Image (cartoon, rainbow, N blue to C red; front, side, top):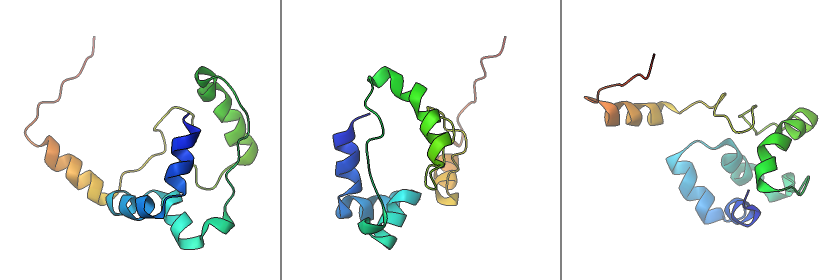
Length: 103
């Protein structure tokens, strides 16, 4: 929703290089590998922030973006953690009790 931060992130090579060491962002890796001239960043529609999640599925279906791994707007469905991230999460949660809120 903050276009300034999104652009600042994508066009900051030092940030991208640092971030790919922490996570496996496909778009960050692709930008560094293929270069900026092979990508296009454009505003498809101006809308109020509360309408973004409502409008995003329309553009996902229309454009079918290659690097958008999350196919449902506002959802983490489709996201897969790297083996390294899964190991870190597992280690961080060892010994913790899991609480389920089931009625």
